[in-house]
Amino acid sequence: MEFIPLIALGAILYVLFSSFKMVRERSAHIVERLGSYNRILHPGLNFVVPFLDKVSKQINLKIQQMEVQIETKTKDNVFVKLQASVHVQVMDTKVKEAYYELDNPYNQISSYIFDVVRAEVPKMELDDVFARKDDIATAVRMELAEHMEKYGYRIVKTLITDIDPDQLVKDSMNRINAARRNKEAIAEDAEGRKISKIKDAEAEKESKRLQGEGVAEQRLAIIKGFADSVEDFSNTLSDVSPSEIMQFVLLTQHYDTVKEIGEKNASILVPYSPGTLSGLQQQIMEGTQLSDNLNKLKISSLEEEAIKKAEKKH
Image (cartoon, rainbow, N blue to C red; front, side, top):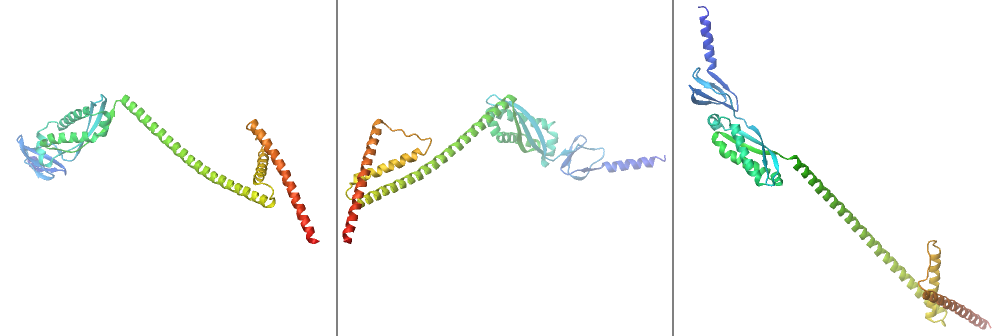
């Protein structure tokens, strides 16, 4: 009889403590009374009726991530594995539907993902799958949102995180990319050589232009020298014709040129033809004769000047 009060006190404390339920933030609990739905317990301290109310396990209201791998075939008959990542969340206003409507919601979501991906990818070639993975993710999200919201699940975001073709296809793609990059490198190298050749040609053009200007100036100087020489000869020796003076000057230039060529060990002077050789011989003979005539005229001129000076003295 002494233990009865202790047992009664323990029973009272048990009933008291079991009458309260603490619910964590971003979670909820379903309360069933005598087997039927009663209400939802929200974050904070909640009261339940002992022995009559049954509290369900915790329902997570946070955003959860699902990873689903799908294997399918593209339009160009390439088998490919896609990794889909779906962010899903139980809606605060539809906790009851999320708890009661679906026995295994994540299997249901996976089924919809499989269905959409296997409907979209076979419409595309492999390159399009890589380029339009965001379109595939959008199609999955829209399909899931349409069917899952009525069950209390909100689709926050859908991503296609990985596209993995067959290994043989990947090897082929790597070879194609390597060949393309090699082609681009060759094209860039050729373009560089082209630019270099253009610059060299421009430099050579400028060099030849400057050389031409130099040669032109040199020839002008030579012509001026010829003109001065002819004029000096004409003023000094009035009895010599201009053609004879020109022949003498040309012969002098010829001797200077031959002398300059002879100073170079690697140079060989070959007449263009026998006619040229005979013509050259004739020019030399004429030049020699002209030189003798000029000397005679010069001596005569000097003698005349000496006679005139002697007459003036007398």
